Length: 288
Length: 150
Image 1: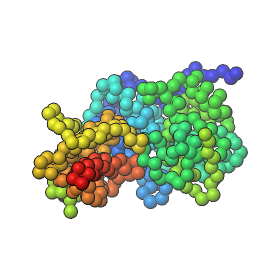
Image 2 (image 1 turned 90 degrees about the vertical axis):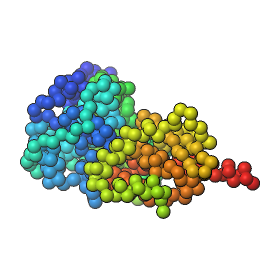
Image 3 (image 1 turned 135 degrees about the horizontal axis):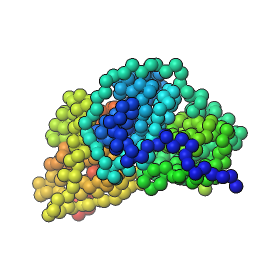
């Protein structure tokens, strides 16, 4: 039986709500809120936090892809972010979209990124300060990233297919019903947007939520290791691909594997089930 | 043709710049609680449930006055998203004084005119759900009226 870690591989990648409340005005940090509820930021947010909309700000409006490096530089400049700024992401839904935004920032090579453990719900539950005041920061001149790190942290259809055929670790982080093919969207969402239900052949089911406690904080390192190393068969140094429906829940798991367990070679297949389940010729499996 | 009150709300939203549109939507969401049933009010029909495809419980309450005009009240669980709260408040206000038949015949194309294309996404389709729920309670009311008259 392998010995499991007793602490996160990169504990500095998380900040606690207590810490953040004491450091709201620190130089060199930018708090970034990213949510599923598109008007939630407008109803109140952590003082000083800026809003990044996962679709309007991070995705190309025409091609299913992310924005260009030029647009990323403009986005960061608009929010007063420089390459040296530590971006602390938080949001609703236990940080799904916060992890997605963090992952997108990593795609463009922004290195100083952290997650607020417990996200918006924990901050609010602890009655910490909220405001509707939208901060304005002096515009910066963020340099246009020279490359996007797609190859390193992002998987495409062909790579997911190769992973499936070679039976290397492939983790489906959707709900059990989605994995089995009983439903095509998360429970409690309109069931639309994909033609077939099921999962990628050879993928193991490990819902994203398995990694969190009831208050949306992450489970301790030892428990995470048991879940992903023991139960999913993920190994350090082995290519691992995670997917969900459009890539936000799998960003959460990607963050856990990459930052909390310190695994290399983990990629997020953001095309996920909305690509795979609709794609002509893509094999699927269903299970009971 | 939309009911007069709803039409005024649509016209207001259509001239608002994007940031003010968001502010106004949030303001409606803030006031959604004001559309809950009030003490002493009676309703002909009450439909409180959590559907499979909705995040939380949504309650719809219908009162039809002697003049045949409807009064809609709504209750929303805490997990209901902001945009859906906004739309609930807008519909309760905008449909006040319409008949159940007028509500049932209401086309849904006004939703994007209020919300704006920027905010309508696959995951915000539940804003249409609220309208569907209001229409369905009106349909039940009209069916019962028809059966009673038969």
